[in-house]
Image (tube, rainbow over all chains, first blue to last red; front, side):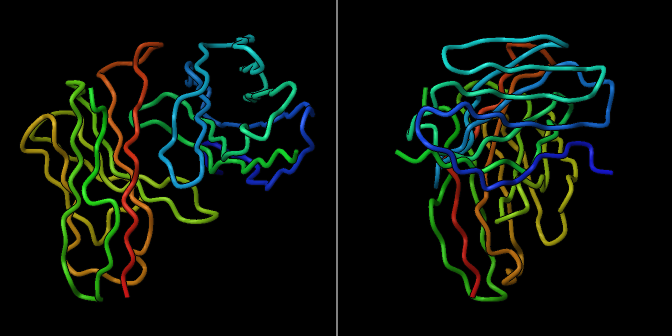
Length: 108
Length: 115
């Protein structure tokens, strides 16, 4: 079993939709959880960073961690074409453990 | 701050040729990483370094070597390039420790094609 599982998609939604991206993980020692966003032909950039269980909101983005289920989610409200990118979840370790990424397209 | 920079941005090699990819960071980060990214495979760690003069193998180290002679630079070498090494290579760096201030920064990538 891989340490982090992430549905690769691709996921295509209409503009304005609510998007849910998810990852599951196996190592219960993980405490810090991240979401990176990667635009086409660019390097990944940190989008959200959460510690332990709970929710964190930043504008249209909400990151959710459920440590009891070893499940993390990223919700995007009122999705925009500019949100079209690949989203990678990551868990803090040395080195970081990444999911394979979910490719999202938001259609105008 | 330039952040993480990578040289070159693009390169085409013939099978058997050698080359070195250079990564530089100006954030005084302890940790540096080399990844390759292929369609459907996600980011795969090649080698990493936890400080000047140290290196360690990642998930896919075969066919690559690295050196970290200076804290700000991390070099990735291909001694005899193979078509299977055609990929996009990303360098990354982050500060020592774990926590909310330990963001990992990525470079813009190097697109390598081996014919």
